[in-house]
Image (cartoon, rainbow, N blue to C red; front, side, top):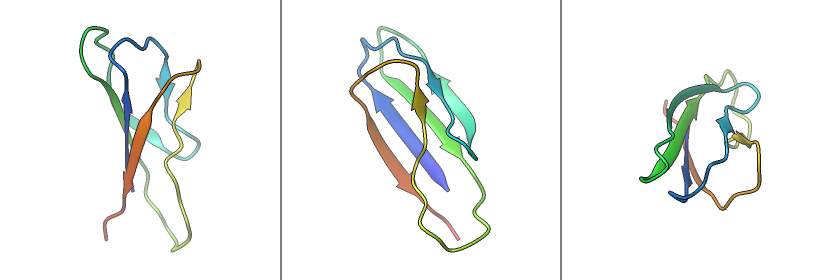
Length: 68
């Protein structure tokens, strides 16, 4: 499973992978697009969701995709 997170360019919050996920990439450039990606391997067919953690309040968007 793959999750992508987008933040406003002015946001300075820290982004961390959620429980069970591994943070793969984080773009921290303050004057450009802020983004992060995380992934995990699913071993069963249950409902999952992206699970980023932020260290402060921020507007955000997230997308999740699964591949077989």
